[in-house]
Amino acid sequence: MTSPVRATGVRLALRGAFPASRLAATGATLLASLGVAVVVVVLGPIVTLLLVVALVAAVAAIAMPGFLLAAYLLIPFYKGAVQAYLPIDLTVILAAANMLGAVPLLLDSRPLGIRRLGVVLWVGLGTLVLAGTLYAPDQALALRTAALFWGLVIMPLSVAGLRVASEPRLIRQFAWSFFGMGVITVFLGLSQLSGADRLVLLGMNTIQVSLAALLVPLIGVSFVVAQNRPLLRLLTFAIIPLAFIVAVAAGSRGPILALLVLAVLAGLRHVASGRTISPRTATGIIAAIVASVVLLALASAVLPASSLERFSLFGSFVSGLLTGDPSSAAGDTSSEARVRLLATAAQMFADHPLLGAGTSGFETLSPAYLGPLLADRYPHNSVLQFAAEFGVVGLSLFIGIVALAVTRPVPPTNGWTAVRAAFVYFLMNSLLSGDILEDRMTWGLLLLLLAVPAANAADRVGRGHRREPQRTEVPPRRSASVRPAT
Image (tube, rainbow, N blue to C red):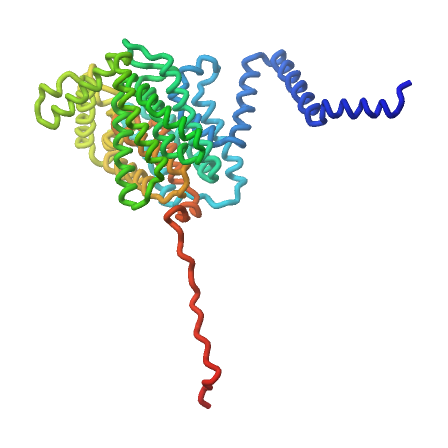
């Protein structure tokens, strides 16, 4: 027989090798695996996949809403690569997942940060898009557009924006997700460079490739390099030149132009504020700029010739516009088409100045202005699209809500700095491409800025923004030798 001492020693050894927590985790994993197997047999693989996706979405809505909102806004950058593996449209899945954030939002007793004026402008825009269906030239198309705008923009972004803006850690989740998408795009783009064709990957078009790659310098400079992690800072500055190579290989001029304008505006704002920049950060930015120029010059031989030609044609086009020489501006058919679309939107606004042509009115009426071969769904300019389709009323609402988002104070943290930089970046890109009614990226970033918690928005304490301590005036004491007259 085994002695009690030996049996006790065996039990202690087993307990040390297999602690209770590990045994519980192993048992839970086995039960979960068995449950999934039973569900697959009973309900089938498609239903099981939907249940798993719903479970993951519910967990993400509770634990990682910042990542979930970023995944929703970044859909155009990866949907083409994953949609074939899903039985339901990915946009609908992530829209529903972000709507789950309404539960913790309702349970949160803290007051919402969004101002009353922001609510009025946001709801007013949605109402105007819906009202524009009443006088639209193609009411069936207008109703479909309005339904998608409410179902995929107004409702999910309202919930997710308010939820993510409520906590700094969620804003950090959001910013890291954007930077991660940029890094993935850069390394995948470098692996698929071709000397003949413009760079396309993950089912994106060339504009989306350039936009995604330039998230690396955008979020890297505004968020990542300020994390006070030397190795991370070094790696970020090393990837920035590679991001410009991928963006140039895509051949889209708009995102690069938007980033350059944003960099100039940020520099001017920084100088006007009188704040200083750390020597390490300044050295890293200068080194990244120099390395980008050098690497682009060295890589020009392996970059797509068609992409490089587009930049050359764009330079000639701008030069021709500035000098008034039509021959110099000829040849850049893409820029010429954009100019025609902008002129058409301006003419449509002049023809329908008060309320515009209605929801999706540009898509319906542009063939009459340009002919069926030159017409397009949208004018590639968010301001002129609102002017053409919703007149002075829509233009006023759009400019008002953008001005409110840009000028509203945000906490002096790197996460919020990245959100504001990303909003301005995508807003400027919307002046050159894209349909503003489908542009969830710009609307989502705008709503985050509108939903900054009021306490944080008013708190300007940070580097160079310290409040002076308030002093309480103390009345002078009366001298003991002086007595009041009786």
